[in-house]
Length: 66
Picture (tube, rainbow, N blue to C red):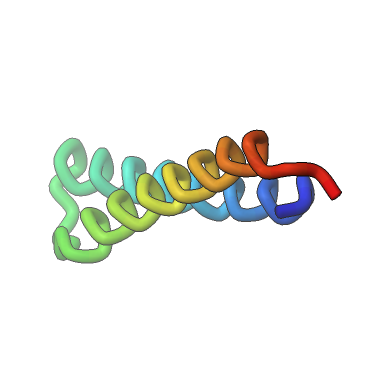
């Protein structure tokens, strides 16, 4: 995976996590009427995508170079 692709995927994953955390804060502190499904879904997707990108990047270190 190229460095720019990895950085773009990490940006999307971290943006998903940060926006979900801000939605969670907005829901609990300000008492907004928001469903929990998109907040929890955004957190799970962000963390899973971050894990997959970082684990794939670690696998590249062990692959033989051409």
